Length: 246
Image (cartoon, rainbow, N blue to C red; front, side, top):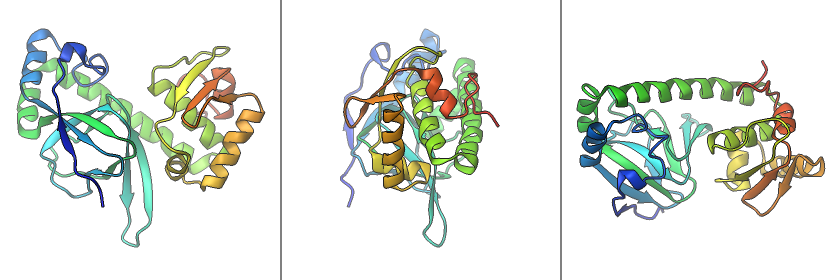
């Protein structure tokens, strides 16, 4: 049974860690003040369902910290992960009252949330929020298309490499050939395997193989040093422009 969620103290927008990457990134001071007036924070322990498919959503939320997975469960119980939500990603869709996916916290998660009706009203007369949301939605669409390639066409080694490359980019790390990068894994190996549609044994073998080949260095269970980002990207079939070669 999941532990209950809890409310968290409000942080000033000027001190928010996702201020320049979330839906509020392009807000002018007046727009930011309007968003701040309708926001609240809520924290969820790992394993908590943030939303279930078909459930009515009362709030539109941005991930402030932590990681959540999005999945779809078929009638026979089979489940497919369709994406990860990391800090600055959003949960919910203006104009749609119900969640399209199951969303589960895979680590402790805190969200900055806005009451749905109030946020939809704000969108109608705050162009910077609306344009930023459109940009993020199109980026999410591109990511979903890339993910279809990962799941449908890549080998286990390429899947693991592509996952690490994607995390580096999403965490704002180095993305140039010949440069190193530090990477924090927001997921356990078991959760990574589930996300990639692999067994944990296969995932562990591929991570070990990448280490033996000198492409990554395991600093701890959750910390990885990537010696050469470009070399790892090539393992994922990445052509250097942020997407896989297809």
